[in-house]
Amino acid sequence: MAEILFPGLAGGGGAAMVGSQKEWLMAIDFNGQVAVVTGAGGALGSAFCWELARRGAAVVANDLGGDPTGQGGSTGYADAVVEELRGLGARAVANYDTVATQAGGQAVIDAALAAFGRVDIVISNAGNQRNGAFGALSEEDVESVLAVHVKGAFNICQPAYRAMTEQGYGRIVLVGSQSGVFGNPYRANYGAAKTALIGLMNVIAQEAPAGIAVNTLFPNAQGGRLGGTPIEQRPDIAFLKAAGARTRHFIEGMKPEFVAALACYIASRECDSSQHMYSVLGGKYSRLFVGLTRGWYSPGPDAPSCDDIAAHISQIDDRADYDVPLSGLDEMDTVLAARRALGLDA
Image (cartoon, rainbow, N blue to C red):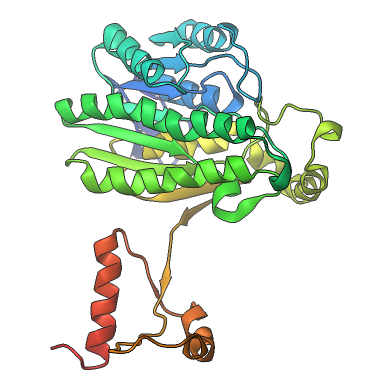
């Protein structure tokens, strides 16, 4: 493996000599940048903090310190991360505010500005789970999860976005889940909350000025508080056993560090793409996207009947050709393209 000397903690100028071939690579670094990581005390959050810090970033490690459901609080989780980072020579401060309130989110960003004077990176990673059968979820089960994941993303990203807009640069990483895009049982509240982040990303990306990018990360890793409930107490035990039978084949790739590598890339200057979704699972890195089939076009003037839809459903469902709209206007353009294909417009 290549040994890379990272700037900041390890010294060096951001270059690395690889093996006997003496090839030089420019390492991604975050010198002079400030990163805010929410949910920093978990397995993924602490891995994000460590990778950012060892590449030169000053880090604000935010963690309420609650249990997997989001209840309670403790300073111990954030403090442990900061103690480790400072022991490595990094600049880091702990924060314990909840992102579930607007005041809490503002306080996290204010802490970053007070300590380091700017905010360059936000990884919105704070989360909780209240898993249960869809028909049995209580109002509190739904409200609690939406408050942390959806409102939490708004509450942390809005004040950060305003600071980024003023300085003309920023990277926002929203942490989604395969439970949202693909679905996993007993997670209706969690899946819905995580899918909402896709819509948030899409809109921020279209509004953001040049220099600010927002992308969504779909991580899979072992460890952390959300997965800490004993399996025999979980309502989704059958799903977990089925997942375990698969992941044992690529268990080495389930370490949080595999996710941190992707998270830190999309949080870096080197990643100038925005409105992208990336998944990492077992060492496999992929881009996700929302596709729109070419479908069937019925120009009117009369609306088709449901019988017409049934007659053309195979064409509507056909995924052989598709578009990937990045806005509502882009989808409108696919209709114009369909009209041109039929010779209806010049």
